[in-house]
Length: 235
Figure (tube, rainbow, N blue to C red):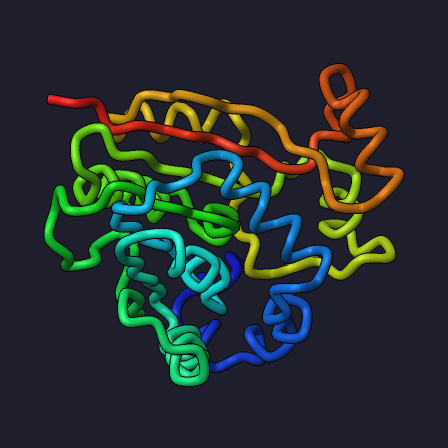
């Protein structure tokens, strides 16, 4: 019997957001500082850019970018996610930041109006058909020359292998489809993007990070994260 599809109801009716809140709401934690710095290292938006934060979750990148760019729109299909983000926005107001409850594959936003799209830790949550829709939608939303940054776990890393086998670490059932570097690049190219950069990034854990930096080129299970920068060609 096939497993039930994890969809919007899963995130809205489960304690998914509450379970991870302490881990992901503290922007000053070592993990979040690492995560933000690494994602922005893929591509740092310019001061005048309009940015869309795809699958914004707790609003991490939306808030991290609000003081750096002209406008940020965070989107998530989970109502609970958007409620959390709007609650944070009340406490930490930004006139150039808003959150929208919308399907990332069909946002309803005006096409060709964004300079940068960021998809940090979302593609592992998307089934293959949804991934195709999101890639096509980001291509539609971006201006010619606009950039699309992607950050996602590499399934072959030792920690992901342990999690998926429930060895010491707990499996995340919302990770429904890990993509490989090759499959993500093909997905983006098929959607009309050009690949500007694609590489594996090390983790935030001291010791392991050093080993990954030295050996990930030859040892696949030390490749922690996939980082890709794609670009919509200019007309």
